[in-house]
Length: 100
Image (tube, rainbow, N blue to C red; front, side, top):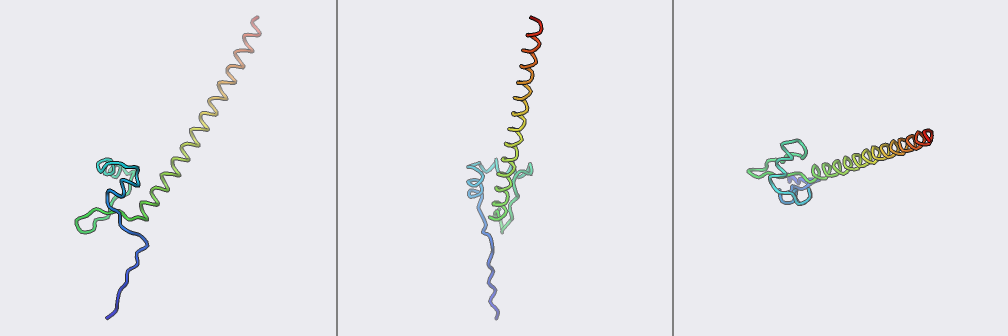
């Protein structure tokens, strides 16, 4: 008889472990994020809902990359807004100087 040894490159995580990785969210918050497509759905193992650790790790990495990209975009927008304000002030000062 052959022995089958299944070596999984991941482990299954319970909902409490996923919530802890997500940032101490509640169960309802996690399931709401799943319904909105913002979180990976669980695998059904028997009657339990479990998440694969590799899927959760990839999802957390994607969230971190998205947050960094959003932060960079906001910084770029803030910088261009500040530059427009400086130009507008300079223009007002120049126009005020001409009126004198």
